[in-house]
Length: 385
Ligand code: EPS
Image 1 (cartoon, rainbow, N blue to C red):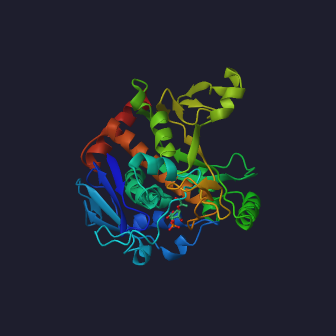
Image 2: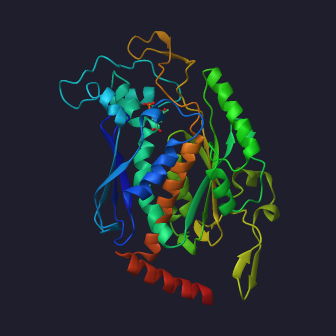
């Protein structure tokens, strides 16, 4: 299973194309729209989210609420297109003068992209580099979530830090995290930390600045044995980190104890093994975050990603003009102050897709009936180990 996206931030639409989704996965526009709406939320979002009300159209690969096995094409129209149709027109009559961007924003794809692709108008880069693309990613990857849901695998994301404000709750289970964070404008399970985060966002906004943060993704219901130790590109931790790092503004990913492992001794890092006849093999801790040797070990998967502050600042940083090389302040495009909650929703989606892919590699089949048969037979074997 794989996916591609297409579309510009102010083009007519964003498109996701999913290839290899097996037949018989329940999938509806409403199901995907729930995730698209979650992606649009969050305290600290900019004006664009007031214009858009992202809704998907499924234009292929699903019939009567079930996937057919054919490619699934997903289209999310941009309402803002009405304001940009002349500027973004693919035709030779496009108005290419009105919204020219020549002052790159430090930290964005602007300068490197313009040099690489030989553009004199940075708009040709920023339109595609924009995190608006993640609307298509959420639409496409939610097909993977739909597949996992059939198998009792759940993916939950929540925000654990924005700027210097971080949650202090420990030991919450995934269900509690989901319930509490769903009530929060910042997808944060700790109401006290949420207040602090909001204050930080307000301050950054006043100062014309932006803020990043950290989100965590927890996956439950996984069997032991997804991914493989045998080859670098089959290791599931590598694939998950790659998927997360491919999201706009993500600068680091950790699994389980992550970077903290570097400070601790082996005895404080590794999860000891136990067995009892009712539970089978088990661990009393999950410091590995559900992955050992690139293979799921049956414990919940725990990943965290850090998002840098958005590069568009209303109080712009020093830059220069691409054409004249004169020093100028970077150009200001409309933007969000903070989009970490949205990134957490996108993170859930891409993690779900990667796991669905690994699931199909192990239990592969062309229909849900076949996959379930393969899965049940493997789980019977695991129980007898
Ligand atoms: C976004 C849409 C964009 C930005 C934001 C995310 O729309 P516009 O540029 O029209 O405001 O608000 O993207 C960025 C900040 C960025 O730097 O890429 C969205 O739909 O999430």
